[in-house]
Length: 182
Ligand SMILES: [Zn+2]
Image (cartoon, rainbow, N blue to C red; front, top):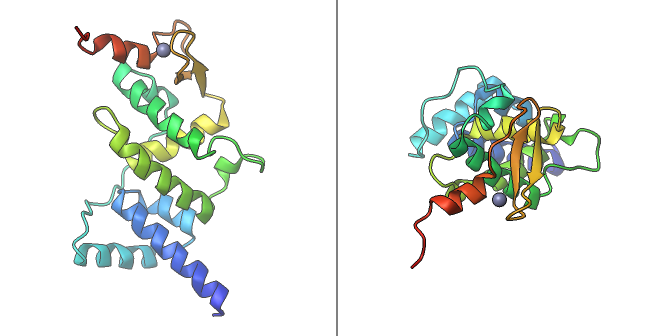
């Protein structure tokens, strides 16, 4: 391997380790980093030996329903917070056509940074990594989910294209729920 190839391989491993810490599914890691299942398994074992907070790998199906992000106020709020972080990182638009479909290492690296920023901003229960990963792609595709600008508070929040009667903006609602300052 030449230097360039070694560097890319190191970046792949670093991104995979980050994704393992975030409890991404093996398949997601494999597609994003192009590492083999075996290499990922080895990294997973290493991460555990190193004492990282690695939970059991998620083997279940990835969330695929767009409606899960708008099903109730709490989730809609979390999704909207994540959307604002993704917007800040310019991950919802790309010069390339359908950048969200490319399983590129670069995308995964940027996504890990954005997800790391999102988690401490979450109000209650942050979307887990797999949900966030799927959400980012679904929102970027703009077929099932879109961002709406609130006419009252000017925040952007997530809506789905299949619901006819929409509820209130989650940020306005959050503000109303907070105890009023005296
Ligand atoms: Zn609002």
